[in-house]
Image (cartoon, rainbow, N blue to C red):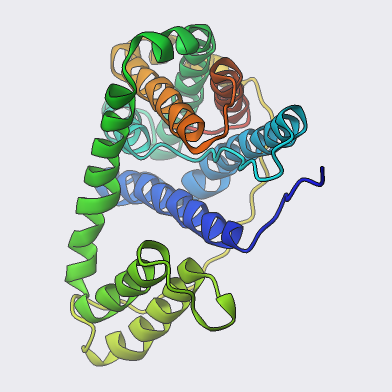
Length: 309
């Protein structure tokens, strides 16, 4: 058996996952920088790299798992599970942990930079706590999968998808209707109606390219709808470096655990749901292994400076 490790449809999946993660990172940065006045350099140079390396680790492990499952089952069409940032917990941690911690530290008399650094330590420690929590609960995932009806697992996943992936982005689609409807139309045309574009060009990539081109052609002239602000490209170079600085935030992070741990539980449930979804599609991954990989990815992110899971 020769495993089909790459097919044309993977391009759609890649861009879908990539832009989903980038959107979540933009939520994280936007909330911290614009809502709480957090220093941008710490967000971009310290928080982002560690968060990204956790996602990278998880996806590499999931890729290896797909190869392993393909070899075990003889199925050449096994699709790797995707690992990305969880939108509710990314937004929730920013709003309920990092932002309030930063304001409280500034209110206690710390200078802005020192308060931001301590907030970063708290965020790292919170990720470590969540990772340990997920590590423990990963051993109960298969049990939950057995006792909860399939409709219950997939129904909750569908509900989250409709709310976070369906309804909320539609606000942006109709905010810039020409660009949004053309991009959405391409997605519906290629992925829902399954009508191929010329040369089998990937539908998601086409939607991104056409939508972006339309926006920058129309928006400067006030024809796209909404407000237009010229983009100033800024490149921030930052490498994820393992550090024990999270230990400085362990004590202060404890008081945020009642808020943070439910977000960890949410991702555990989400992991169980998507594993069940993959099983229904024909890829029977081990639930415990999937959850363990996600837990370790969260721990790695926390050790390397990440603040989102």
